[in-house]
Amino acid sequence: QAQYVESGGGLGQPGGSLTLSCTASGSNFALETMGWYRKAPGKQRELVAAIASGGLADYLDSVKGRFTISRENAKNRMYLQMNDLKTEDTAIYYCNSYGTPLYEDRWWGQGTEVTVSS
Image 1 (tube, rainbow, N blue to C red):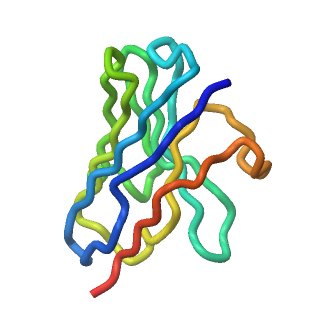
Image 2 (tube, one colour):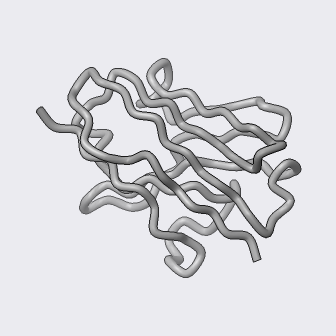
């Protein structure tokens, strides 16, 4: 069974940067389209960025130009570089296979918490 472990969250300042990492195991990571997702307080989980096995990426409109998703297939790792942080980026961030049901908690790990505050 696939497992994904997120790390790198913490406190960031508005305008600052954070880099999240995801380590995959038990899956054909290199062949999968993957995604970074987030769940903000009082909101539903949403897809923030997705990346295909070959590196083609797409982003939520609100993070375009600020966030960059990348992956290292040989290391079973994925990253999310977050620049120009905004308070509305505050959320728990998760990595998972693209298409994972958003609203069923059993498919999701612990995530890594990002708080953007001055």
